[in-house]
Amino acid sequence: MADRPPTVLVAGAGPVGLTAAHELARRGVRVRLIDAADGPATSSRALAVHARTMEVLDQMGALDALLPLGRRVTHFTMHRRGRTLVRFDTNYDTLPTRYPFSLMVDQVVTERVLRERTARHGVGIEWGVELTAVQPGPDAVGVTLRHPDGRIEETTVPWLIGADGGRSTVRRQLGMRLVGDSTQEWLNADVTLDADLAPDSNHLLHTDPGTLLLVPFPEPGKWRVVDTVDVAGADDPELVRRRLAAKIGRALGRPVEVGAPSWLSVFTVQQRQITRMRSGRCFLAGDAAHVHSPASGQGMNSGLQDAYNLAWKLADVVRGHAGPELLDSYDAERVPTGAVLLRSTRTATALVSLRTALAPALLTVGTAVLRRVPPLRRRIEGRMIRGFCGLALAYPDSPLTLPTDATGGIRPGDRVPGTAGPAGGQAEWGALRAELADPRWTLLAGVPAVGPGGPDGVAGSGGRDGLDGLDGLGGFRAALAEAERSFGAAVSVRLLADGDGPGVLADADGTLRRSLGLEPGEFLLIRPDGYLAARHRGPERIPEVLRACALLPEGVAPVPH
Image (cartoon, rainbow, N blue to C red):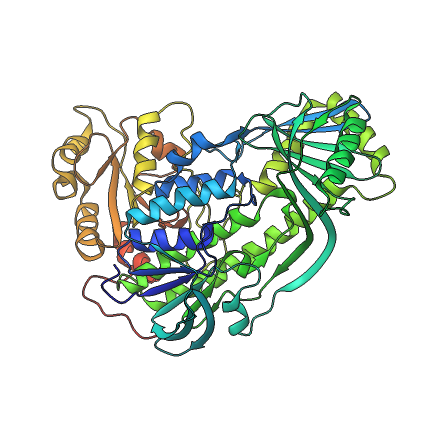
């Protein structure tokens, strides 16, 4: 891609910028990726990769490389004065997923996997190239870049994505401000512990006063310790080591050995975001647009999902598959999502720090009740999971969420659990999982499940000849074939039916149709990020629905926006 001018400049080669570059390049968009740093990060930062982010990485094709490198965490344990107060399990009962856990893996490792995947699509990283100025225009963005040798480059690009972190130059150049507050100061320390703690759990230790949060690394015996009270001495590793050993030992009721910190950092807990994430041809994503408390590990996860949400939309517009109004949905979806995440991380911060005078007594009494009432504990576990896993986030008010008269099944705006794989129908769920890895939209139409020799021969004709052979479907046959001819570059048109063949997503026993709530004669339009845009009945509605989502038939030029 280097021999042709880039269509999109991505500033910042962390996980957010890498995700944006990967998804744009995967869709054939020319990308230039720069970063002001001299090279890849080597210090420890984010650790947790949550369930929804794993689904995104699965769709990107990057998860298989990352999973073996992390540690799966499925519990949250609370301790005080030598007692284990409660051990929470995970509860994904209402949020089915193939990944019912958090993956603890150093952000350095996550970035390495993403760099390798992005390089396969022909995108390298220009290290030491700093973006210093931005001049937005109606048709292009002027940028000034400083190279490692001091050379100044002034150029223009059609589109700019600022994934350049909390001190974003792009944000400042666009005159945007992070709005919110900063509250507490916490200390991070990466240490080895000889403490006999379950490595499949995060641990909250009440230290009277204050708390320590312990998060396991993949490496045996290595933990990140977050001290919510004592932040002094970050320049004295031995002082921090002794203090942590005393506090952990007091909370667990036994002596512990703490190794010298391999990384120390004091940070201010912030809850801030911008009020819009787009300005003309410029976009912001990740920490450039919102900063969170680390209490529930949302920063990298939400940023990666910003980039994923933006990249497919920008790619569709760049390639002429959609009108420019599609880009308005980025702001409309991700700004409210950022606000929801700020509220949830604010709650998590209060729960982790436990700074009220009554906290010790309430903690002891409350956890005792939870131990005695398992159904209550299970409900609490479900609420905890919903607060951080990302699976509950939806876009009910998005301009891409179309109203429906259907009363059952997945609602428009909700995530399609295509990677869930519930008991039974594993082959069918695997086929849907593969379908959602396609970078296009997916149009799924449903017909009754029938076996060999069933009524009207629908299954047989679909299995042999694909969409053009669906003689038993009347109007659906023509409508699906026309949608494929007119929108096939942007939309994968599939029929859920018995049998197999081109255009058919095999669903022999109706597993997928039942799980998706897809009635005979209905169709679903699923966005490239796996959220449901529309569900309607009747083939005559298909062109209308596609156009309502800003999609354009092949050969139709977009109207300037």
